Image 1 (cartoon, rainbow, N blue to C red):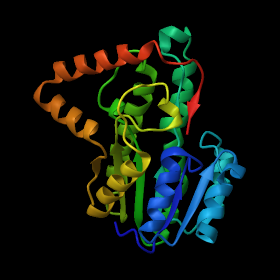
Image 2 (spheres, one colour):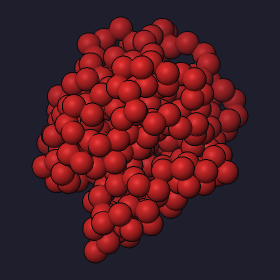
Image 3 (cartoon, rainbow, N blue to C red):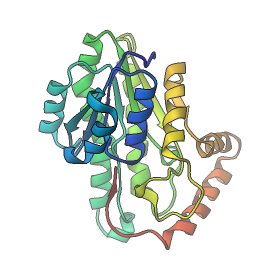
Image 4 (cartoon, helix red, strand yellow):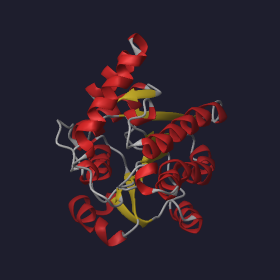
Length: 257
């Protein structure tokens, strides 16, 4: 997809990776970015920095009424980037309920589905474009204590692949972006080397412009995908080891972007 001249909508745009995506898209000549967040006042710094090329938009992707209002407010979109996500503070057994799973599915899987349903018709009317879902290496391989997050991200990966089939022939490309540890508030408690949001955004947009459907946006994603081809059991064991290293530092409570 050619980014220059397109009109984008980025969910979870107020901080971290979402903010980096907004900046990177504008640097590549996107005409306008509808920057969406649950609290639109949090988008003021982006508007101050980039002027009227950024259009703040209130949006909770779990609220169908807000999704419908966003689609009505941004009928010019040709690139939908589903970045908003949540990481629950505990795994299924730690929580003792299905609440973490329900929340992560609602934001990380059902949210992008709502957005695709709302915006695919507009993208098609506007001459075609793309839907981009921010996934994770957790979509490829489950780690202990992050099982509900992985379940939601795996569901989002399946949704992404299904949309690619559904939208074939309608001039809408569908991309999945995979990354490991990104230096954002969501995983600030993890003391391991992380990729910068700017680097992830740049590598992701490179993949979109090159037309690569499955984009490995950092070296961890590349390495894990290769390891799962060469030695699936060894790749899973490595994920288990890393998860045990971070469990003791993992705080309780919802972490969202």
